[in-house]
Image 1 (cartoon, rainbow, N blue to C red):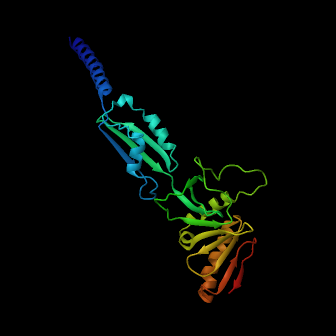
Image 2 (cartoon, rainbow, N blue to C red):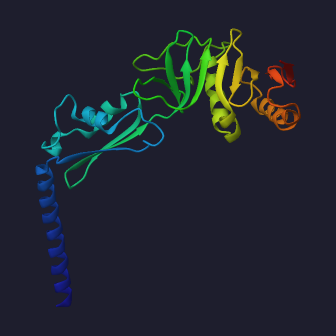
Image 3 (cartoon, helix red, strand yellow):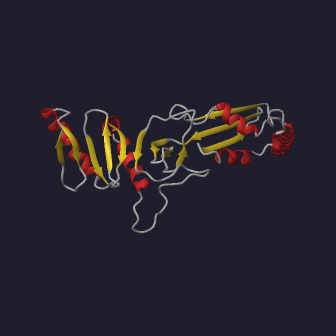
Amino acid sequence: MKRVLNILFWVAMIAYFFLAMGFVSERRHEQVCTFVEVCIRDSARSHFVTIDGIAQMVDNRNQKLTGKLFDSINAVKIEQRLCDYAPVHRAEVYKTIDGTLHVDITQRTPVLRIINRYGECYYLDEYGEALKHSSRYSAYVLVANGYINQRSPGQEGFSVLKETEPGKRNIMRELFDLANYINNDKFWKAQIQQIYVNADGDFELIPRVGAHVIVFGRFEYPDEKFSKLLSLYCNGFNVKGWNEYDVINLKYNGQLVCTKR
């Protein structure tokens, strides 16, 4: 008898489960979108996109999603549309049972601001991809200017990590690597404010403290070059002062040449 009761109990539970699932499924088909919630995950670091701007893109030309059946809203298509927008690195769109359409946005993070020889301004992000300058927001990052021939990005931009022709120098890649090197060191990030590309293609570093220019040359042997420069800062400048030299040349491997003003 006990065994029969156990069987009946589990049969009832299984039947209840399928009935409940059917009810939930039916309710889901009837579920409407009651609210669109936009979350910009890294808004403290970058401000290239706004909640209102993303919300307008989600609604797609004023076709409001609130009040529409969830089944008629294509979350994948919305994600694709948002990811096609240059400042957006990643977009996640999903629905919850309370009727909310969630839109989570991760922005691209600029690491270097480029001002090319034509006066055009744009950014390189943490993945080496070009990002158009925003008239609404300027990121407080390292600046590179001078004889930079790469034009401002088009609709799809470009990547400095893309392979170049064999034997051809990729100045944009070197600028990106140098900027990352500086940004990853607390001292140099605080000290170096600008990279100037001169007519010979050499990088010149402009510091925040001191009236000197640092001729860095190409992006090669960075550990050795910055080590020599730090030694000069710690030992030489403490004796001579920060304004003793006009030019500090690190261009040549194994050498540090200082020119007095």
